[in-house]
Length: 283
Ligand code: BJW
Ligand code: ZN
Image (cartoon, rainbow, N blue to C red; front, side, top):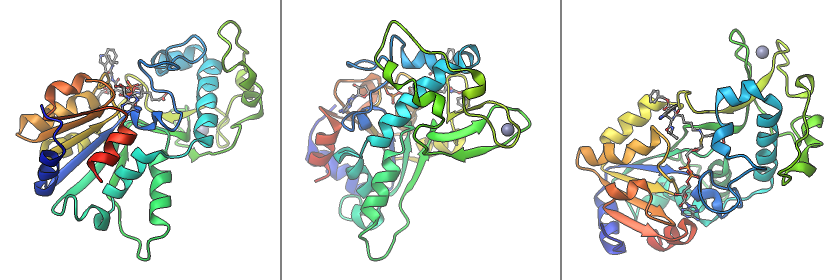
């Protein structure tokens, strides 16, 4: 395992297929709490992962919607950080050219916050000719997608309203309260405009199938370099991608505050805040 930047740059120069996998640590410097570890990952008294299941939603739609409302509002105010911009520039062929001249690149993110898409819009705006950027796969869905829970209804919308509905807006003053919790009536939670059933956040919960998983596994089977940024690698199937790349002889580079699970697979380990380390390594 190495932290030698020159050696890593040589690997970049010769790579033909690069897979970037990002996690919550990438957005930490934008003020979005991570799911595990660190201070501030609890919401009220709840572990966010305990709210990320279909069971938690059917048991308490009010609580799960309040959690999502809280994070929607946080993300609406957030801006991308230098880590998002480095990875976004890497996704634009002419900007990647000197660093990884022969590479196709795909960015798979576990993040649901949409900050990479925001960064892309900003990076692309001043470009004279708009280039097709590398594909971004949001494998755990999007915080601003809202979909109907009825089995026979396929309603899906992207919704940036703040608040998403008046009743959730009035729960904000409880955001940091660990002792009491308002209850929002089912009828006042987001409903489907087509069939009137309850809507749910368009994110992937535990036990649900991540988006484009077969494509993602195929990308890992072909990648000669996997760059894993700010993920604890605690959640499958994302946690398996590094070892999948290693299994056919590809290299793995990890950017994290601490040696995460993936560090065992890492050929390169760049410890420290990724928003700083990415800038240094991809300068
Ligand atoms: C920094 C930093 C800085 C901080 N710089 N670094 C038993 C029962 C039921 C299910 C299972 C089971 N055993 C296994 C499973 C499968 C399950 C799973 O893995 N569970 C384990 C937890 C046990 N997985 C699933 O169910 C997945 N689906 C699935 O497997 O389907 C089956 C299938 C697979 C393949 C083919 C076909 C079918 C679905 C997982 C869904 C995850 N959903 C969530 C919630 C999203 C919605 C929401 O927001 O509410 O996604 S959970 C949460 O964890 C979120 C994240 O995307 C995901 C990963 O977290 P991430 O990104 O790694 O963040 P953290 O917080 O864990 O780590 C942050 C890291 O950053 C840390 O390492 C820090 O050090 C670092 N860091 N600041 C650099 N500045
Ligand atoms: Zn519906």
